[in-house]
Length: 234
Image 1 (cartoon, rainbow, N blue to C red):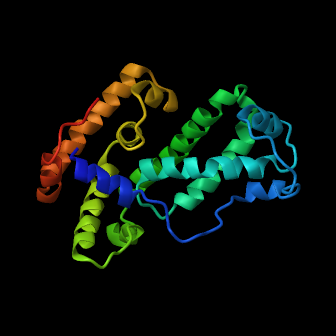
Image 2 (cartoon, rainbow, N blue to C red):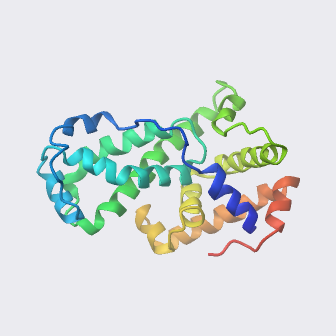
Image 3 (cartoon, rainbow, N blue to C red):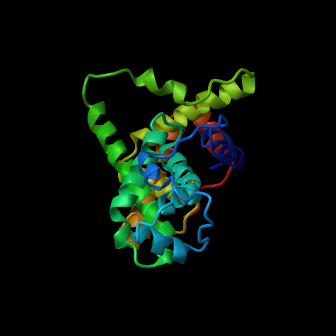
């Protein structure tokens, strides 16, 4: 993937929204007391407080990890109108499953896996719906901001094409591919996040790379971007 193309994806397509908005999930309302009380800063103390359901713990947990979860969502989903709903779903599921986390060092990887599997459910539903004669393929086009300059308009068109290629991939292949190339995880981390063997993770990434390049080379604009840089690095 060419360096300019990669930079465009990282700095524009998956850039956080600039307008401030409170996206705290309903579960955070459980802990809106004791916000003026100093809260433990270490993950060990935070996990202990979460498991004990101490007042304020969930809001602090959300404030600490929501930016990371949202970042992962943007990497695996791309520009998407349901990111904020997914963010709430992830933390609602975290509330239900936090007792399964015994080690504070596993807290962030566990939350990352939860984020990926929550995203996978939505992507699979969309795959299924795509076979039905419902909706309009262009109904999602406004999830990519509409710029005004000529260069930005060209980037927007390019990113719509990238999104279309990613949407066409097998869901699990796409997730492994985006975790590896957009999130920058090591192969072992991809395998751990997706609960699969290392060999399966390698196979899915390689298959996604081949399919991504095949579809990209069929489009003149994407073909030119790929030609600017080196091959994918596995």
